[in-house]
Image (cartoon, rainbow, N blue to C red):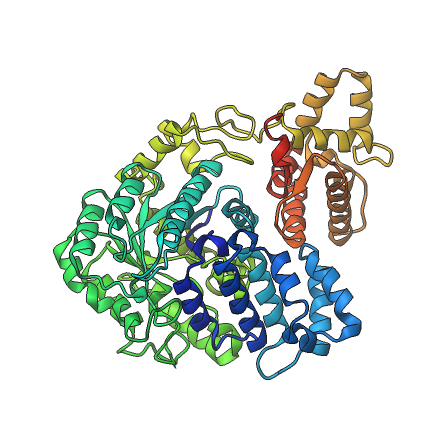
Length: 595
């Protein structure tokens, strides 16, 4: 079980303000991204913000840039059809490899970016352009294991001149974000946001927290919001009284209104706050930043004494059990072996110190991280870097304490108790699989429902009223020639005759080990993996051909990874495969009422 304390599920339409576009232009400058691509994106967003904001999509962006000078320079005429075809496909390892090869052969201004950087940029755009926050969340969940937990942080970027439409945009984003907690109970935990530019900001935040919909508070000081002031004082007093953890952006990059405004993130500004509020818990996101003022911090030979990272460590020592920091979006170390060596040494030094080891948290910064890496690759890299014991500490034990989750013998804190009551009152129901394990184990969380519409059980759901489940049953039974069922299971099912209910229930108890990629003799593990991938591809084709289903906006690579994981365990049951399919397929919206 991993707990990711730093992720986002907003899409472009949910944050599209004039101020956002301005700050996005600053954030993308200096990234390994061709300037023509950056300029094309910003021009497109400016145009759609003024007219037809509802049309924003990856396809619309693609059509818009299709005839631009950028596209014509990037892609030679004879390869544009090939590019169009692959850009319209869901990303997969094969698509990415083909597109990478193409860009390596054609990319302009090679000194600006490598082709993998452009691939990462397009993958990030694919997520940002998703139509609904539901779709972004579904993509995030494909990178999570079944009982993983992720905190999702909203974004509210407006200036004081913002009109009514821009001011109401965040309110819809907040409601959409809260809905994700109902769709993935206990697995998606929303934070609220306060923005002093809004006159009603405190009241919006208080309602989100008091209701139990949100369990913590996100602050973004570099947007021009100093920690001191009447609104912030009311906010922090409320958070302390109601056991609400606070997470704030803490580096001098990211979204920032100006270079001077980034100084509002300085951890030393929080000394008086922590003195005034003696039980307040605070997490400094990004651990002060991998670099500061353009100079290396975490990849330096030693952590600079004047860095924000060292300031945070001093706060951890001064306020034990109250000051935390996450290591989200730490990627610079992968660019150079010497930097990676220094980064590992500095991080291990912190984690070996009793004063700090319990206060370092795991975070990825999905989906902004996708500009440079996937969440899965990021997780694997840190797991390898730290080893099992330390990675478990920062990705499980420490974040559970920060968030107040009822784990390791600790009772749920007030923010979590409110959230469980909110889930129950709003009839939360997992859209796939079950609620998180910590929620199932809590006495007040036992009634939270899974995909079968019943209270949580010990095994995956298998329901004849669920179209995903019945489609998988039809696939396995109708595809018994060529067989995916073992000879023993075919005989058992044939003995039951044509009784559909009994057949369906029997398949629902079927171990994955009774499928031919486990039951038939194979040469080695490579052959078995190949057989599982072949099975997974056949299932994908079957589901894609069913008119009542549509594929979610998630990647084929993630689909194969999840399917291989579900099918690799011979002791798992067939409903485990159904859980994976529910991540990637859904009943078309116009047919949901029938279901």
